[in-house]
Image (cartoon, rainbow, N blue to C red; front, side):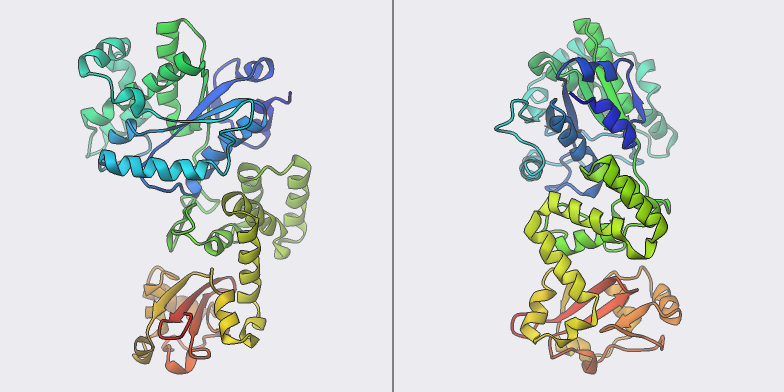
Length: 428
């Protein structure tokens, strides 16, 4: 059996790990878990690295467990957070847990594999503890000094906001999760982002103290783009896995627009492509970056994983037509169908007749972050109306711009476009 540790290492997904983990992967079938915070009913691309961690684990013959934190979600993890989280109701958490489970099922085999995945809500045990019992059976094994040394706690103590006793106790709850999974399923590994290292090692310590057993941890670095921006955030907002929140077209475009400096790492992190294929794409990015072949492969692979093959083909077709002059020769109904997955905003003809400045439209639909940015882009030749470059920064969108009575396509650069759909038009 190939060693998963080596696989994760060449993909750049090992920042810290416990001693002996590589040997454990080579000698036994490891049961491992990763936690998911149920703060929304959908995961986003920032969670995708975590999902892929479980999927790789299963593909290498090990057994994955996904913990959806119905219990810990009622407390809130202070790791990586500068402020206290807003607490959710039990009903909100249950709804979010159901949505996350449906998305995980696209990546993990919960039914047929001999190493079938499990999805577990930690409310199954955390919600049953009484306070005195929890303090006696878990809290007594951790000193306050030990907890204060954790980076997530330390950072919050240094902030003006501070940290509540509720979030301070989160470390104990996650440590208890690891112990429960060890007892119930002989789970000996927890994985996650590097901000979880303190929580993971607390669980390892609890297992050592109470069960005299060895457990492991492995974390990867938190992601940022080469430009220093937070990964998964765009001017239009978060990129979600739920197609109702982020359309497959927008999802495909997000990956297609990846910076050359990031694309090889993303191929390693977010696809199952072999090393030789990624090396080949790395070479093409260096020798012919203008072809963006690595970005095309990345967008196709990740969109297929999340949304399926049919949606990939639809997104590619919409992309090719949207970014070519051929789209303007289509009959209006076919044009609207082709643009069905493109990011869009419904508008009325009366709104268009107001003849708002194009900069105002660009700001309102989220293509730019400010009107001053719109002016700067227009002056540098970076703004388009129906694929025609805008020359005047005082240019307004008028009824004359409405293509076949149905739409106006605004563009920032050649690839980032947004459709104003005339809501009165049939089929719009």
